[in-house]
Image (cartoon, rainbow, N blue to C red; front, side, top):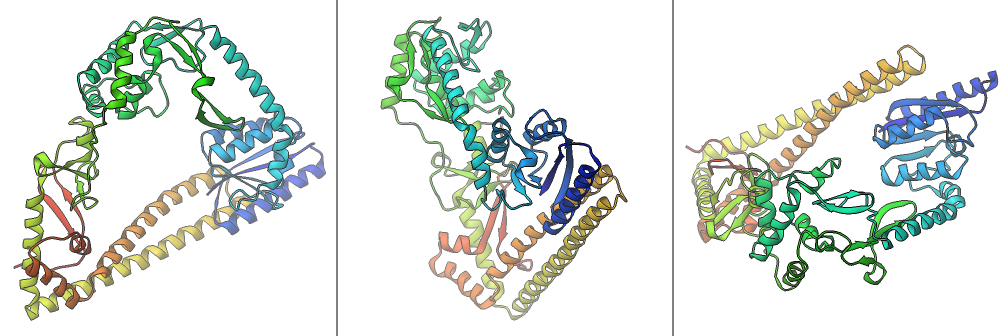
Length: 492
C-alpha cells in the first residue's frame, strides 16, 4: 500500500512547526506498523476552510492519476472544513479506489468506518444536488431547442454550434456499411470482426478516448444500429447520473426522453433504420461463444493465452481470440478433438503399462518425492527472501524518519524493493500452485487405478480429464503440449 500523508497547520508559528514534526512522527510509526510504503508527504500551512492549498491540490491531482492507495491524515479537519472539498475526498474514495484513514479512528474506509465523513458530506449534498438539477434543466432546455448537449457526437457526426453535421470523412460510410451488412443477413459479431481485421478505427479511437480499444465488438455495432440519431432525430436525456456524487448512469424512461424529429441530416434513411429495428427484434443473435465441450477450460492457445473454442465444422477447437476477432488478433491454432483424445488415452495406456513395472514404480515414486522436496525448498527460500525485503523496507522508513536519507532516496529504494517483492510473490504463487498439482495425485496406487479406468472404459471422461490433466497448450502448428497433474519419468 502506497500512502499519501497529508499534514496541515494554520500558521507558521513555532508551536505549529512542532505540531508538524509530531504529526510526521505519528505517521512514520503507523506506516511502519502496517508494513506499508510512504509515497509522499503533502504539507500545507494554511487554514482548512479553503481548498486553495498548494500541496492539497497536488495530492488531489496525484490521486486522480492513482499514484497512491491510501490518504493518511491525523483527523478529518486537517483535510477539509468545507463541502466542496469533502465531496472531492468522497469521490477519491468511491471512484478512484483510494482509501482514507485518519489516525483518530473517525474514518477508515478499509474497515468501512466513514460515519464522520458522511456527516461532513451531507451538509452540502442538498446544495450540490440543487446545483446539479439547475444544470440538468439548462441542458434539457438546450435539447428542446434541437441543440446537441452530449460530450461526444455520434460516430459519423461532428458538432458545430450545437448542431450535428455529417462528417466529411469515411466514418459516415462505415455507419452505412454496418446497416447494409446487417440487412444483408450478417451478424453483429461478423461485422465487428471484418471491421477490426481491415484496421478500421473504432468510435472510441476516433473520439480520442483514453484506453480506447482497437477491436470492434458486438456491443459497439449494436449501439450504432439502435441509435436514432442516424435517422436524423435528436434523442437526448436517454441516461442520467444516479446521484450528484456518482458518475454511474441509469436509463431514463422513454416518455421522459427528449425526442425531436428531423433536426439534422440523416446518414441512414428512416425506412432503412426502421427495418433494422424490426430485424433486431425478430432475429436471434448468432452466438459465437463456445458451448461447453470436453476440453473447455483445459485447452488454451499457446501464443495469446486465450481459451480454445469448439467448432463443429472443424470437429475440434480453434483459438478464441481468432474466433472472435479474426486473423489480425491471432491464428486459428486448430486441433481436432479426436486427436487430443487419442493422444491422451495413448499416454495413459503407456503410463499404465510402465506403472506395472516395479522399477518404474520406484522411479516414479522417487521423482514425485524429489520434485515435491525441490518445490518446498524453493518455496522456503522465497519466503525468506520476501521477509528480508519487508524488513529492509521497514529499515528505510526509520532512516527517513531520522533524516539519514532523503525522501527521493527512500522512494527510489522502496520502488526497487517493491518490484523485486512483486516478482518473488508471483514466483511463490506459481510454486504453491505447482505443489498443489503435485499433491493432487501423490498416491501411486490410486494413480494406477485411475489410469486403469481408461483401459476398462476406453474413453476419456471429463472427470478423469480434469483429475489428471492440468492444462493443454496448442501451438500454432496444432501440436498440443499437455501438462499432466503428476510427475512421470520418460516413457520407454
